[in-house]
Image (cartoon, rainbow, N blue to C red; front, side):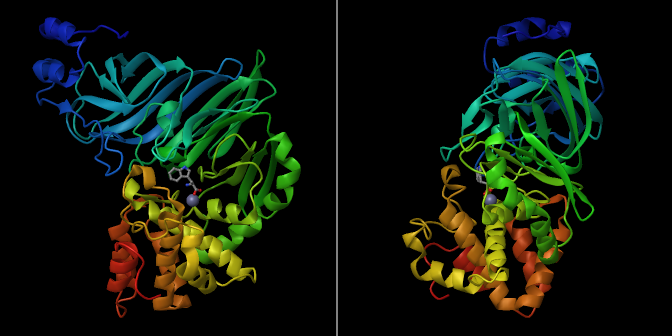
Length: 477
Ligand code: TRP
Ligand code: ZN
């Protein structure tokens, strides 16, 4: 392990001893007098106690901005990066963690000064030379390099950094972003981003937000992307490849799509409907929450699923219209209104799935009621686990994305609300909800309280008890 040595003299012997053990926090306690200012800080937490991913995120600070400079060489899968993270301390801090897995850390600085750092599992612990005061804004800079890891998440799917035929794609739900940049990787800490990616000339590098620059020198091209609206780190993406890029508009919103050459033909028709889908979604869910839109269509084998990466969802191969509707609906439900914890996942998937039902209804296919009834009567033929657990209480991290309970049954919860209040009130509630938490975070309690507040004459107790929190198949539709 390499780390820069800038020891406070009084702590030297203790730290040398402990650098061989895993107990970095013990060293911090023993040395906390050495940090400068009057108040003694303590280390920030190594997680934010998410019910499903206790190590995800970190305590003691709040990130406002990530500035990432990445250089990727697809031939040998080498990524080198510099991450500058701007954050505000939420306690006096002697040290704090970032989440990063794999990669070699070369240097860490805090406020421009070399900092000590240490790594255990996904925790990169940074100890600034001067302690940080509660409320202080600071900049931590990390230089790192290596071959980023492909991670297998608890449900068995692959995320993190996924090499493709001509490049790679970074996908981060729920934990994958820590494979390609150090950060506070929990959905509760949203931030703005600048992501600059340098790749061999001739390849494209696509990310979130808007393209603000593209320059080529010495056979390498740098694409600079800016995300002005807050983003959860699991929605950050970088896609490197020989994409065919198209630009258009949807109303006032610029649209940037990048499509793998083998998928151009198959996706032309569905992508042409993107403006129409956004317009439809605005009518139902409220104003589009971001300043640009688009899609990234990779090869069919690039990933095992589509993901609602902010502004520009990723699809492994040409999507059908239903999937496009689903991922675009996530821009409201998940990307703009983001879960506070991974337990609140049904708020993402239930609404994105219900959007598919509504689209089908509005296109003259089955009504949402018909979809609901078919699921209720024999849905377990398609989704074996439909009644296995309630949407708001997944049994474990491995089941967070189970389509039966977390997508379909959660959409049934949304439909029960619509049945209860009627269409006019339902759309008011949905639009009010996306407005109330626009660019923020919300959890299940926020949602149920909001619905009750908007429809004070209705009784939702049975819906919450049976459909949202109750075990087994609810008694009557
Ligand atoms: N959110 C994605 C979608 O429905 C699916 C997905 C990909 C997912 N990776 C995940 C869901 C990890 C839960 C956990 O569009
Ligand atoms: Zn989804």
